[in-house]
Length: 120
Image (cartoon, rainbow, N blue to C red; front, side):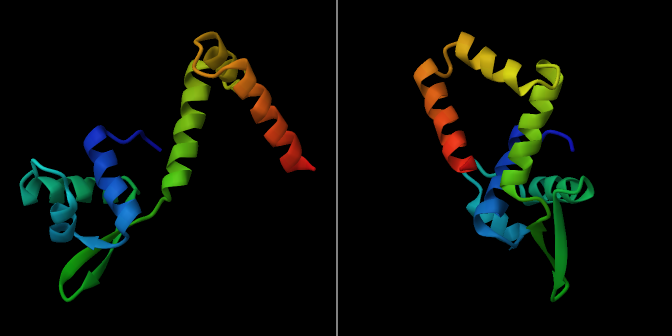
């Protein structure tokens, strides 16, 4: 699965937060400045073609809905980053976060404790 562009991610966020929507409803929820209806419609059709959205036909109009959950997209994105930049090693990824001070050793210890408690 490919990575979403920023604009596509914004559209998917709206679908993930609001559920099935017609393009006109999506446009109303889109932050200002809103693009033209045709621009949004084209992006939605691209997301459908790429497997992110599907639609139901309601009174001759298409009501689109997400095919992939936000959590699943996030997991796939993380897996892709770990695979591409850390030779598929989650340990290397976590080590990089510690080295770059994105996570402290104490936070890492807390995480280990949470994992150990979850497995009990």
